[in-house]
Length: 365
Image 1 (cartoon, helix red, strand yellow):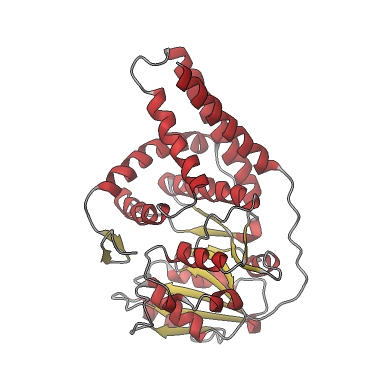
Image 2 (cartoon, one colour; image 1 turned 180 degrees about the vertical axis):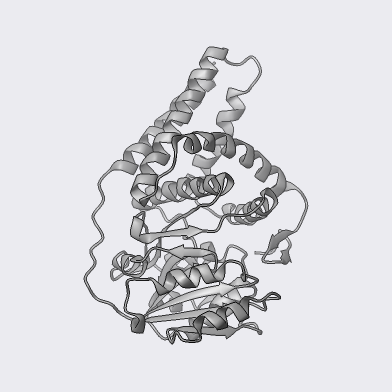
C-alpha cells in the first residue's frame, strides 16, 4: 500500500500545483499600436471543404489590409482547393496563391510548402496557420505583442467546435495547450503548434529555414526546437484574441490518424511533459488494479481526479474566452480515457502514418 499512497500523493500534488500556476496573474500583453507588415502563411492540400472558412476569417482581421501579405501554398491538391482559393481571392490584393510543385532542400510535404512560402514572404514576421482554422479578429496584433525583441516563436491557443465529438476535441486542445503554457511560463521549452504560431524572420533564418532541416512529420516541433536551440525566446499564450477555432476531425479513424502523427512528435517532447501525461496512464492502472484498493477509496480518488480536471478546464475556458456546458466538460473524462487507450493501441499497431492523403513510415521524421 506504500506505493499507491506515494503515487496518488504526488499525482494530486502536481495537479494542485498546475491549478495554482494556471490562476497566477500574468503581465498583460501590451499592444504598442504599431502595425508592421506581416506574412500569414497557409499550407493547403485537399482543403476545398474548409479553406474558404479560413480565408473569410482572415478578411475580418482588425488589421490594415495593406499591411497583410497572405500567402497560400497549394501542395499538389487533387480536389478543387485551387479553384476555391482563386475564386475567393480574385479581388483581394493582399492574398496570393502559390502552386508548390518542387522540393526545396531536404523538405517535403507540408514542410516543403512552408519552406516555399517563407522564401516568398517579404516581411519580418511569419504567422502560420492551417486551412481549417478560423482566427480571432485581433489575432495578428496579439501575437505581435507577445513577440518583443529576443522572442523568436509564439504559440496561440486552439480549440474546435461543432457536434459533441468536435467539442470534446476542442477541450482536448485546450487542456493540452494550457498545460504546455503553464510549463512554458516556468521557462521550460516544450513545443510550438503550427496552426497558430508566429515566428520572426530573424529566428527562422538563423536556422536556415525548413529546407535545411531533416524531414519531420511534426515540422512545428522541429522548427521550435531548432529556434530555441539558437537562443531565441519563446511564448505560449492563452487569450480570446489569440484564439483559433479548428474544424474537428470528422471520425474516430481520422482522429486516431492525427494522434498517431502527434505521438511520433511526442517521443521528442521534454521529460517534464512526458511525466505529466504518463501519470494519467499510471493513475488508471493503479486505480483499476484488482484488489489493490477498497471500492470506496477508488471512488473518492476518481472523483477527486475528475474535480481537478474539471477545474483546470473551466479556468482554461474562461481564459480563452470560451464557454462550454458542464455536461460536456464532465463527459470529457470518459472521452479522454477511451481515446487515450485507442490512440496508444493505434500508435503501436504496425501501420503507416496517414497525413493529407499521403503515407509515411514511422521511421520517417
